[in-house]
Amino acid sequence: MKVLIFMKESDLRPAGGPAGFCYNIFQEVKRNNIEEIVFLPSDDNKKVKQINFYRKIIRHFPKWLNSLQIAYRRKRDYQKMIDNPEIYNIDFSDYDAIHFHSTISLFKYRRNLECYNGKIILTTHSPVPQHLEVYEELPTRLEKKIYKKFYSTLDQIDKYAFEKADYVIFPCEEAEESYIKNWAQYQSIHNDLVQNGKLVYIPTGIIPKKIMCSREEIYKKYLFKECDLLISYVGRHNEVKGYDLLQKMAGQLWKTHRNFQFVICGKESPMKGLSDERWTEIGWTNDSQSVIAASDVFVLPNRETYFDIIMLEVLSCGKLVIASRTGGNKYFEKIGVKGVFLYDKIEEAIEIIERISNMTVEERRKLEQNNKEVFNTYFTVDKYVNTYVKFLYSIKDK
Image (cartoon, rainbow, N blue to C red; front, top):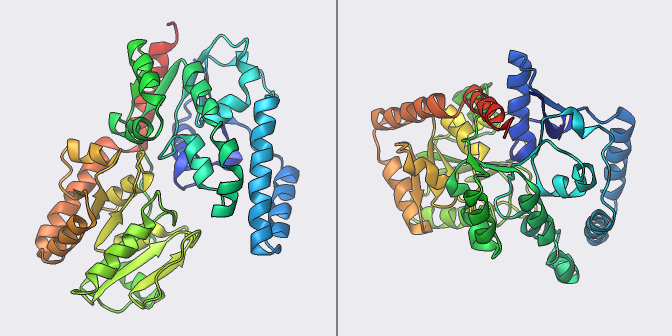
């Protein structure tokens, strides 16, 4: 059995999304010399340097021109993909299965799949159907207005990918919630997948992050004052991730709890942080796990949720989580994780934060330990890969 995971080794990194998901698999495959699973070879250095050089140039454009440039290039690339499917320069027939990790990559190289007789597997990672996500990621309202009509046609990419796949893997049923809610065609697609035995659930697994700095070192590094509660967040600063909702929580909490501190990791774009000494923006960091471990509680305020890798990272650090009752977050409530608290409204989240702030040290430690135990029982990368390999052999001769 030989399976190609359609991700370049050079694109893998310890982050969220498909790149982070596949990074964890790659490390486990390499550690255990699992010969059944291979990845696409890395880009040559010349190509990577050309891309990086172009990115450096456009940074110096005026902000409005830079935004228009980005939006125009994206539209051009999607139109090209629709009009002229590309051919990848490898022989797909060498593999028993090809596993795509985005609907876009499956659609882009659909010509390679025309005569392919192996199994086509699809896993999506976007919190909403990908055609909606790429539209929401346009830089400003101007670009969204200009290109709204064009982007409304891109659901054909998602539809093609789901229908072309022999198997679709989701981490859990709850991860499909935003697809059903935000894309009218998905309920019919889901029903067809179930009816034909093509829908598979395998919970995500990750390598636990190594905590590099102690709480004391983090406090000293970022000049934190001792506070009643240190609340952390790691992720993109946009509406889908609920970054603005987190800011509303802070504003309401500070009315009665002036000594609550927020520490935020991730690029400060497109939304900016609050101008308050109790709100610290660290920016992108390769040691977000130490920040999480130094905090008292982590907030995951997504409006839409797939199955966030950051949730698993927080559990592996043994920290309490307050998360919106959306999508994949509901899975943790279903399996009874005691240190994960879900909420429906901001007011409920604030009540949970207040309740945690009033807990004794012993009460918190007990819940934190439960989170670690849950992670080690269900969400390590070796458990995912073992289940995944069994799945691959189960479909080999079907």
